[in-house]
Image 1 (spheres, rainbow, N blue to C red):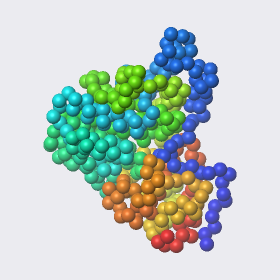
Image 2 (cartoon, one colour; image 1 turned 45 degrees about the vertical axis):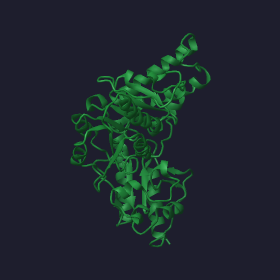
Image 3 (cartoon, rainbow, N blue to C red; image 1 turned 90 degrees about the vertical axis):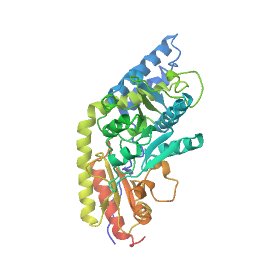
Image 4 (cartoon, rainbow, N blue to C red; image 1 turned 90 degrees about the horizontal axis):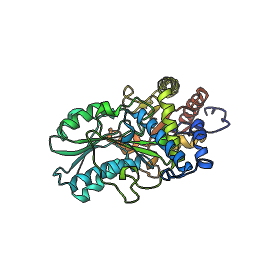
Length: 393
């Protein structure tokens, strides 16, 4: 029996694609807006309301700066799931209401569930969902997209970074292909914002979604980028007081917005050095795991990938059994949004993995607060778990 590593004094968290720890500097920025500057940002007729409004607009500018956008192109939402729904359904319904004959909506088989389900939902309204395959490395072939767009298309939605494999798609190139074909282009930036450079203006993206808790901000806040020039028009999903340009009614959560703005500010300042440090930790982990488990396999392109992600298949071992054997290690078997599902990852199946291979795969997410000691523990714990689990378990 392989000797397990000493138990850490706290769980070792390596699931940063599911969510990130809220940075203490973000928490400190938010606190006054819970307890002192608690005014409604829409109550601009008094001092506390104006203070909250000013903080919201400052945060909006910080988000815009990180994304290469204008402040007037940022709409606050509850997160990327809501933003994706507004972008896809809102664009489709507005176009239909204006008599646009185009009904095709193109996306990719490895997209987040909320994108795939949003596109699928529109079939009941007379739209034509088209889901494109990816190569075995998780990347979309540009020629596959071009072929799909030979039929007039209303909207293309392709995520920037996959939430399971960390693979980076060529958003700028795909946006250009879509625009040349006369289609709107939307991208889910939930796993990209704050991790890789983003310039939505230069990329000519029309719509983009961001989630605060994926970049060390709070849960419950996100944004939708809506291009102003040329203007992109959307139909809102629900009615209300007309806040956020009428696209997302409801009282804005000033504390969460301040937190998101601070998180974006920190990401803009620290991204290059952080990515280099995290990439070094990933190399350290991969080297140690590969030495202890020679048949270990990496899923998805290692070159076109964010620094903090590893998606690994452990041959002849069930991922769930490995996790049970290393209870102090927080990793996952796939998307947190699909964690209640028993079946293997649809993302990995779309990349050509068998059900058995997908069920033997772990997603490891390294982040800002991961230490070298965390990496060493994770490597030792997984190697020990692999050695002690019987083949086929």
